[in-house]
Image (cartoon, rainbow, N blue to C red; front, top):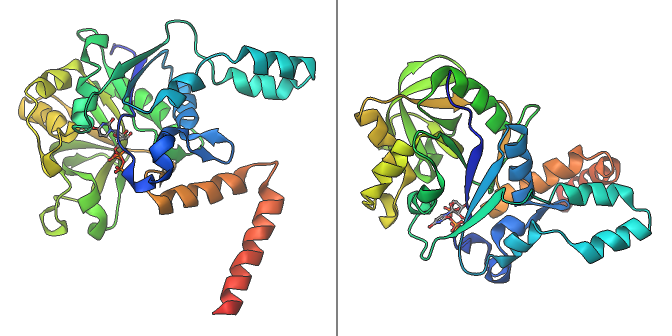
Length: 298
Ligand code: UTP
């Protein structure tokens, strides 16, 4: 029986330069899809997968993120007085049990691998943990991390969420070299961070959901910088394969939006707007009109 995954690390210390000037004052993870910040989608997904402890790797300028998870007594009492029970229920999803959340600082944005390494003292020996990047938002019937934790109970080792991308896009991702394809899952024999299309071993790209063993943290201890001069998580996971421990790619069910990019964020806004019962009629009608107007203007 594999150990259950109950802890997740959220690396949120990046500079978010693709969203400047907004991210000069607002953490990227607080930007909202419809009416919920990106981080809330990640927290809901983590909770659905059985995560009980939440570790945020933050940096300067991220205090709005910390405040977001606090109780807001004045707001709550005002809503209570006005009988706004539905909104009060919504607010509850933003609260964390005492001691369930921890913040660790990454003093310098040295890369995703370094951000995860910053959380090393909060992970026990032999304790598997999840890593979730909140700017990857995944819509689907069963939340992505839950699909992964269920599959992980069979495999153990390390697992990364994977999806097929067009060959000309591989240079934006970590890419898997597959030794065995089992359909919804692949066994990995190598990983390359941001390869040129002609050097990519496949078009199966890693996206922001991982289940890792503490061995990966030991690999990160060596702290060698990789592609782009950053300390890469991919390199530390690839080290596991060299040491003959299992690494799996998991083809999840669902639609992934890259909310770290402007185009991806807009696509997610449209998709989530269209899927909301309270908005879909008005919003979908507007979209039809907007598309028709734009076609007519061409
Ligand atoms: P990105 O590659 O999207 O970088 O990081 P970024 O800084 O957030 O955004 P851009 O590219 O400048 O627009 C992927 C994830 O890794 C975290 C980010 O916060 C994001 O969740 N990260 C990245 C860190 O926590 N620390 C780092 O040093 C780098």
